[in-house]
Length: 455
Image 1: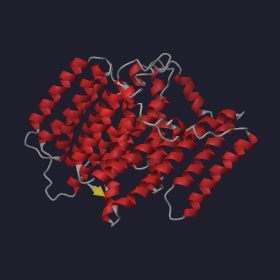
Image 2: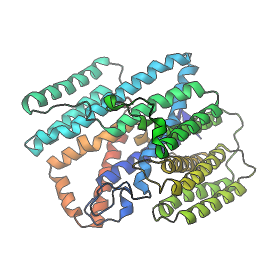
Image 3: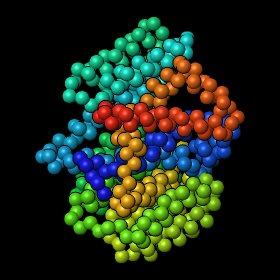
Image 4: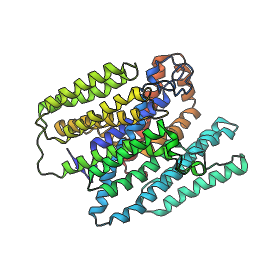
């Protein structure tokens, strides 16, 4: 396994795959007669109306938790590197606060940028607005040794905001934020703080995991027991207690990150045996299995088959001390516990997230990264194109909506493809694939030329 400058390729690959899946699911044709498993389980066709009473998960519902997991796995890599350079643990807190502030402001800018074009009279004005906003975000967030570039980006965004208020009548609203980025901002902060205080005690970190899980369970089944907790309604645009439940996924990721980092520095690295390769594919199969069992609501069969897969995995790797085996065993344990919570929670759901969802996806993400690490360690698979996307996540998250999409719309290409996708499953999927590949290409080029966004 090759590690350069504290980067682990498999984590970048996982993040790249997740972002690609995110853009794909956001751009597939919603009116293309595609089956329900191509969308969020709680927003099924043909109406796509949100219904929290629909249990199950699809591949789309794995995007967010897998990204959170990768974020958690990266925490030990970035923060321990600072400690080894001589920084004191308490000095890392301002670093986390700065990251939280950048992401929170980014969430507010994005949220308002999504809604602002609604006041513009012409579609081409909307396209120009989005491109200019993206240019401002690019200049503001690009990593550079010239602070004036970042300052000019902030100034451009402020000028655009003033122009929209004065000439278009748009009223910015701090509550109009991108909820995904806002959750990531809070998880980056609290996940980092938890790691700082438990960096030398994994057991203590798991105790925090259990405490959060218990609090989640109490709030789900006996909400009145937590009535003493202060309300966050007045600052809901910046923080909500419900965000904290996602720490279950990030904490699991941070444990995996520490495991991989410890292995990378160990002098005792054994080659990956053939049995571990076979076992790795069993771990991957267990992840894929959930997309059938939990979506089709064959929960009992899913649990039994997953348990059988775990037993076979343990039998194949009984004598192995490989890091991938250790994390896969942890992943199977989390997976089985999560599936067991499915009937208790009344069925697994992403929205609103329940314990079954949080624990099951934590296990699935752990099994998936163990598979990627096995491939990297045994076969040296680098997947540079995908990893390049994963190294620049915030740029990848925005480039489709604020650059690629507007350019294609202004050239009448996107409306043409959208018209083809109406009622056509082929073009419905093709549209998503086209947009995803364009995003990956743009992000990879930025990464290649070291144009990274702060995140």
